[in-house]
Amino acid sequence: MSGLSDLIKINRNIEAQNEEIIRLLKIIAGEEENKQPEENTLFPSYVMPQAEEISIETDFTADELGEGEVYIIEDMDVFRLSVKNNETTIDNLTGSAVLDEYDAAETALNEMNEKGMKFDAPTVILSEAVCGHLPQILGLCVDIGIKKVYIPIKASIELLGAPPELPTLIDMEVYKNVEQLTESIVGVESDD
Image 1 (tube, rainbow, N blue to C red):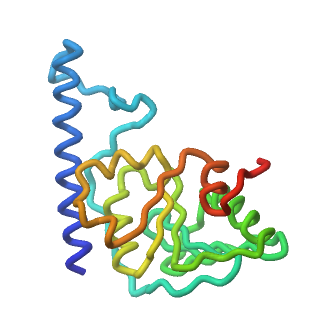
Image 2 (image 1 turned 90 degrees about the vertical axis):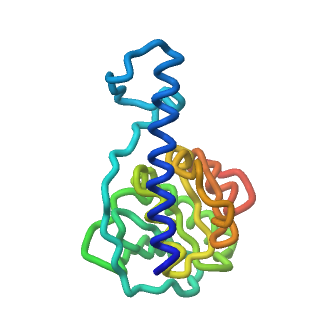
C-alpha cells in the first residue's frame, strides 16, 4: 500500500497548491484574502473540494473484464457494470452502497456491445462523483490493479501537481461528456 500512501501525500500537495493558486488569483482580482469564494475562479463550475480523509480499505483485486463490463468507483466502493442484451446489471464488489451515476458508462458499454468490443485491461469509468477524491480513487485503482481510467474533465483539475510517474502506473484519459467518452472508447461518434 505504499503507492496509496504516496498518492494521499500527493493529494495533500495538490490541495495546498490549489489553495495557493486561489490566494494568488484573489490578489490579482483585488479581493480580500480572508474572503473565501465558493467556487474556484480558474474553473467557475468547479467547486473546490473540502480537505477530508476518506477510508480506503478493500481486499478486492481487479480481474479481466468480460464483454460489456466495466468497473465504476463511487464513494470508494467498486462496482462492476455489465450491459448484455440491453440489460444492465450493477454489482457492488466491495460494499453495500448503491451506484448513483452510471449513465455515461452504460452508454459506452451499449456502443461497445453493438461493435462486439470489450476492454483489453481492467478499466474504470469515473463520474463527477469523484470530485474532491480523485487522488485517493486513483490510489485505489493502482492498488487493485486497474490499468485504464476515464476521468471526467470536471475532476481532472485534481491531477495538477500529480507526480510525473503517475502515467506509468495507470493509463488515464479525460472526457468532457458522454459523446466524447463513447467516441474515445469505441472509436466512433455516438448517436446520443
